[in-house]
Image (cartoon, rainbow over all chains, first blue to last red; front, side, top):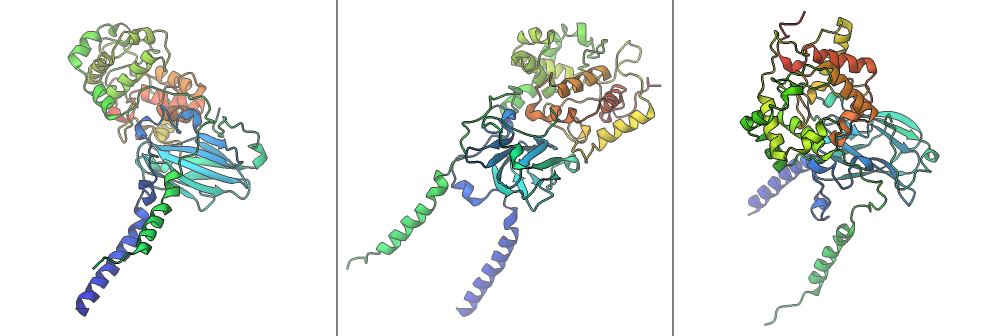
Length: 173
Length: 253
């Protein structure tokens, strides 16, 4: 009886270790299954919803925080040049239109995973004005090595007069 | 003998259930303050759309396509530099452009009235027909494609962008979406396209005249290319040296 117990415990321990080392590879957090609808259709992102092209970029929220809506797709981030304010909470809402991409904010510790069909949210606070690249960190295809966005952190007063229905990015006009 | 009551356990269960409530109630942030919605193209590559666009009847397309021959050439190679070659262009991209002309998302005084007469099925048939035309033009004919090779410096610059892109600016290589290394639905093969048309389309994408690319892909790439790079890429593809052409064209100097 005691031997059986020890055996079962050791199997559970080894299994637990294997599962816990692979846990970071689970793309969709468990609470998404309880969170209800929140899915987006990757094929028709451009038709309606949150990720239509006119809604991408940095938006000012009524409470003074900022939201960046970003679309990762086959070898391009849109907007290509992201403008975010320094010193205030910035929330990234990211999705993908084809497969998994990861945007890596190279100046910080931050990475955001873009998963087709779901919207990933991440909160950041950039301490001071800076400029850095944001490459894709997950191999996504033959154009992966050239997939790179640019992040420009500007003083907050430059974005303070952004209207609520206005979106900002530092892409070429 | 009665079953002992265990109110504690029931309470615990209710408490656990209530823990999930905030997650259920937490919706996505309100989108009341969206700017006016701008839709680039009404085409979305859902399963049904791809099935419709890729299962055209090429024979029926060849009958409708007789009228296209006036401008696009009897074998899909036009004799005017402003008119695109259609031979060998894949079905999905021909179909998408016809649909965009139909819905007015891409504007052209010539193509819009023509596309208005076509149903989605007609467009799929035409797309099937043009995709089956041979991509090798007859060198005896007076065709726009292929054109003269650009000078070596230009063609090296073009090769670099087509094969590697520019990682520093975040420019993906052309061949990662236009073939033959990678493909994107709706991205046409460029190997048989004429140089003038390619250059004009790159310019239209960068100055915002043409906006029917899904998810701002080509607009954001074309805006970053310099004028010289656009010309180099167009001339390179226009010379039949594009990577999907396989062997270099025998008619080339």
